[in-house]
Structures are given as C-alpha cells and as structure tokens.
Length: 184
Image 1 (cartoon, rainbow, N blue to C red):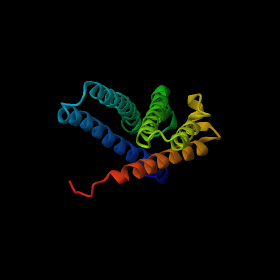
Image 2 (tube, rainbow, N blue to C red):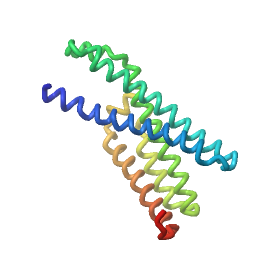
Image 3 (cartoon, rainbow, N blue to C red):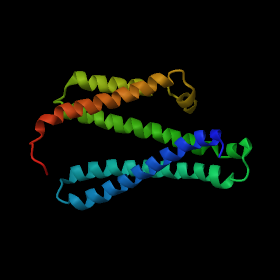
Image 4 (cartoon, one colour):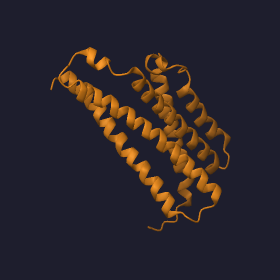
C-alpha cells in the first residue's frame, strides 16, 4: 500500500468506523427508550421519539451514502487505480453525505443550545454566546461548494468547536450542584 493511499483512506475508514458505531448507538437508544420508559407523558414520548427518529433517519442516510462511496472506491475500483474510476462516483452521493453531516451537526448544537437555556434558568448571556457561535459556524456556507472551499472554513471549525466547548462547560456547571454524592 502506498503512503499516499494510506494517508488518504486511513482517516476515511476510521471515521466510517466511528460513524457505524454511532449509528448502532442511535438504534440502541431508540430501542432502549421505547422499552425502559413506558410511563412517560405522551408529549415527552412524542418529542423524544421524534428526535431519535430524526437522528435515526439522518444517520441511516449518512451510513448509506458513506457505504456506497466506500464501495465504489474499494470494490468497483479495486483493480483500476486511475483517478477517472474514483471520479466516476456520483457526485451527489458525496455532496449529500457532507450536507447531512452539516445539517445533523446544526440540529444537535441547536438542541443543546435549547437545553442550556432551560438548565441555566433562562440565562440569556450563556445562551446568546452558544447561539452566536452556532450561527458563526454556519454562516458563509450558503452552497455546497462553500462547505469545502470557503476561506472561512477554519473560522467555522473554530466556532463549531467553541460552541461545543461552551455547551459542555455550561451543562457541567449547571448540573454539577445537582449531584447527590451517591453512587448508583
């Protein structure tokens, strides 16, 4: 295996493996929730199931698109190492996969921004900072091409990471006093 082949495909296969594990975890969460909490209020059941099903649908689409891309790269083009074989992959599959990742990341961060709003007692400052970073990470990406060629790509990645860090820190800060000290 050449160094260029390994450097290109190793991160892809590692990411694909992590995505498959996440897909399995989503299915497990959906099955667990349905069986473990039968006495939840109807509205709460509907909201949780809708969120899990939406995540399940997007994860299913992402898994399908990733699998078809890797199938083309490793099975169909296994004897033909030319660039033309690799480029024969339908462009819409790759674009749709990247778009789904973009949408899922936005939905998850927006959901957690709402959770920060609730657990912080409607703290406007923290929620504003989270929403501002969320917005900054998604601006300047009006088209698919902007997702991969924008000069703001590094800024967008930083803003997304900052959004995740602020969400994690604020959830930890607000939920930490509620710990009882008892080990379950």
